[in-house]
Length: 223
Ligand code: C5P
Image (cartoon, rainbow, N blue to C red; front, side):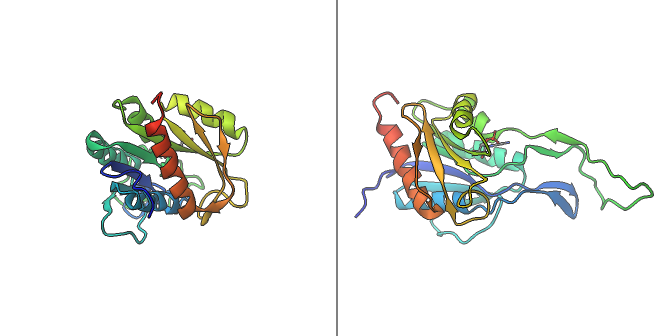
């Protein structure tokens, strides 16, 4: 019997790639499957937590997990902000679109005479950064960093800029890491510890490691 590392805690997880509408039938998105976020939600549930999963993608999930569907970045932020007052832990595993279409067309965009069509994009809110900035004492905030170079250095910068307690960093150019895979290979970067590189493993197993790391951070004397 595993110890219930997050017994009685409320864990909020974001998952999946957001969808940003262009018109009633089209949207911008990315290759994130949501597998890592769903695995984290399940690992937190198994560790005894009450889990709110704010998801842009639908995957099979244990019925004890409270799933809130949020398709766009702004919907996701609203759902997260509703859940945060009672949260002990926030894990931002979603691949949030950095930009959205400035003016969503009311009707389907038609082909027109010109060869070019220009979409005007505006920046989306940064959900992780917003949560980090509004963090209450005792709340643990966890983010991900998908990098192609200077993995640890960029993760350490993100730890500070997002006011997070843990960044799970992966080099997306590695074969066993990244989008739409069942495995991931990451380095855990936290404020109070040396960066720790983990072996490549299933996202479900990595989720268990991340939950253990969160519990370690909560019990650290300087947290
Ligand atoms: O800044 P960057 O996108 O590289 O940071 C990645 C981390 O920030 C992930 O944890 C992701 O879920 C989160 N994020 C977010 N909202 C955004 C962009 C990123 O929550 N608009």
